[in-house]
Length: 143
Image (cartoon, rainbow, N blue to C red; front, side, top):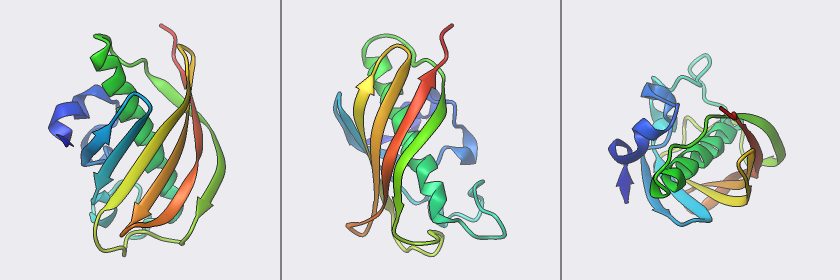
């Protein structure tokens, strides 16, 4: 298990915008992260005190950022910055997530990766039940 202090500085999401708390496990193809940030009043995605399930897409996207950063670190480089450009086949099992007791488990699976873009499938679970899934694409900034 990797605490945020191990990888948090590797991604652009800082402070309360870094929604993931720990990396439970990761391989070259996948990542499993865990978080309680959905229950925090200072979650920057809240609107009128509510955190909607659509924001789970950001949790999935952040798992991609952490995974890419860990891969780059292992390769002795830094991860290129990127922009989320596409969400597809998103399924949400509920309307809001701020009232869920206990942590969220965030899973990301790398489908394609190149120097120009990444594509991942993501899945978020609460108490062992899937509450969101989808696919996301990131275009990397070439410097």
